[in-house]
Image 1 (cartoon, one colour):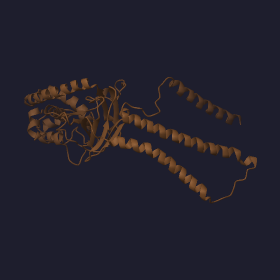
Image 2 (spheres, rainbow, N blue to C red):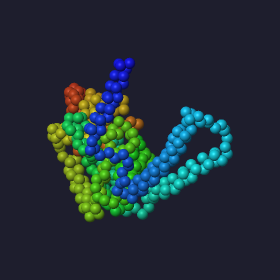
Image 3 (cartoon, rainbow, N blue to C red):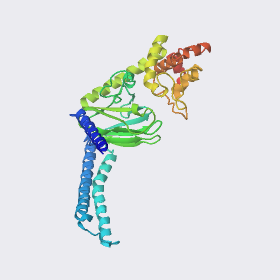
Image 4 (cartoon, rainbow, N blue to C red):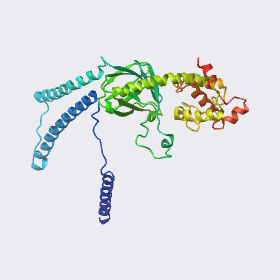
Length: 389
C-alpha cells in the first residue's frame, strides 16, 4: 500500500512540476488564441461574425450545461429520485426542432451578408492576377503591365540549421506584392500546376488558386505596413517554402514604386539583350549558377543533386545533366509534360538558365562524366536564346 501511494504521489508531483515548468517557461509570452481583427473592412466583418457566432455558442453551452448539471444534482439517485417513463411527446419534439431552426436562421443572416460582401469585386481600382507555381507566386498588374515572381528568400543556412533562424523564418520573399492603401484591389487567382491557396490572415483573404479556373476576391487595406501569409493548401513537398508578403504603401509611395518598376523593367530589357550576347567565363557562370540553382531548383532536386526519385530525378550522374546540352537546356526552358518539372522560360533570363545548366553539368562529379563523353559543360546565354523559340 505504501509503495502504491508513493507511486501515485510521485506521479502527481511530476505532473505538477511539469505544469509549473511549462507555465514558468512561458511567463510573459503573448498568446493570440483568437483570429486577427485585420486591417481591411472584410477582415473586421469576418472577425465580428466570428465573435457573434462564438457568443451564441457560449450562450447555448451555458443553457444546456446548466440544465444538465441541475438535473444531475437535483434528481440524483442518492436522493431517491425515480426517472419518469415516457417515449413520445409531440410538443417537446416540435420545440426542440423549432428552437435550433430559429438559432440557425439568426446565425445565417449575418453570415450571408459577409459572404456576399466578400464576393463583390465590382468597382475595383486595381486588378492583380496571382498565379501559383510550385513553389512561388507570380504577380501581374493587369493595368500597369508589371509582372514578376515572388520567391522565398530565407537563407539556406537557416533552413539547414547552420545559423540562427530570424523572426520571419520562411515568411520572407525577394519581391513582395506592393499595393496602395484605401484602394479596392481585385485579385484574380489561378494556378500553373496544382491547387494552391493564397492566404493572408490580417487581410481577411483566403482563396484557392485552381488550375484552369480564375477565382475572384478583393481587399482594401486601410493602413500602411507589411502583411505576411502562406500557401494554405498542401501543394507538394515544397509547400512550407511558399510564403506571401504584401507591402501596403500610401498612394504617393505606391506611385513612386510604380515609376521605379517601369524604369527598372526598361533597363532590365536592355541588360537582358546585352547579357544574351555577352560571353561569360566558366567561373562567372558557376557562381551565378549555384545561386540560381539554390533558389529555384534545390527544393526539388536537393542541394547535392540527389533529387527525390521518381518525382524529381537525380541530377547527380543523371541522364539530363550528363546528356546532350540541347536537351538539358530545353527541359529547363519548357519543362516536361506529365511531370512536376515546370517550365522556367517565363521565370528566368537566358543568363540565369545558362548559369544553372553550366552549374548542373559541372557539379557533383558530372564534370568528369561529361568530359569522358566529350559533352560540353559551359553554356552561354546565346545558346539558350537560340533554343527559346
